[in-house]
Image 1 (cartoon, helix red, strand yellow):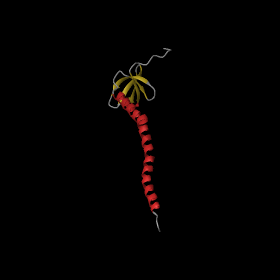
Image 2 (image 1 turned 30 degrees about the horizontal axis):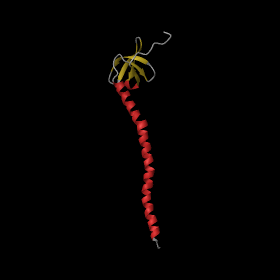
Image 3 (image 1 turned 90 degrees about the vertical axis):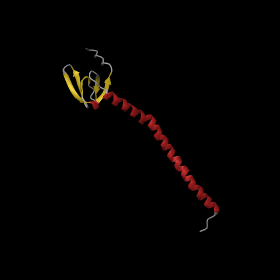
Length: 113
């Protein structure tokens, strides 16, 4: 077979164009990942970190909300469990990780009490 110089030049430029096309395909994927990181992943990690710190700092007398939606007052704190008084004389034991929120103020009384 005989190759002309023009064909050889076209083949050479096609191989160098392949790396540019690869770069053009990869850059948008990297850009999408960076956008997801700053708008979704990073804020979620910060929120989880503050929630974990709040749960670890729970102490006797704090008002808490459990995962089941129960409000109560912490009466005893152990390593991985807490005792919550949900009504006068009624105490339940719960795993710390099941706490949804630690309230700074006491919840308001219902309107009909």
